[in-house]
Image 1: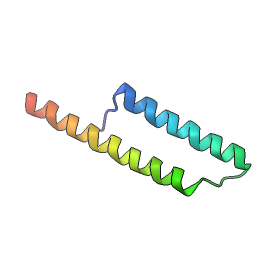
Image 2: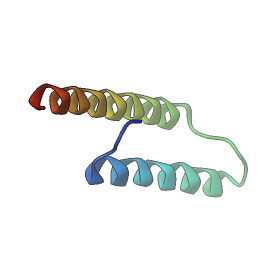
Image 3: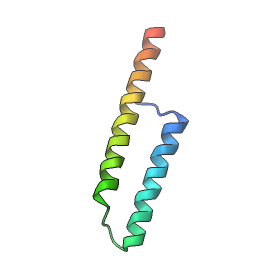
Length: 61
């Protein structure tokens, strides 16, 4: 299981709030394509970062 650091968790929470705001403003389930692309990329980076950190922990043991 991937463990997220506090800053990563806050970043993902902020993205989710931004998506919700975008949906509320548009009064439907539409999500701006650019916002969705940015969200996907940040999620990928967070997961990659978490995996690398986990690998470093294993090497330190």
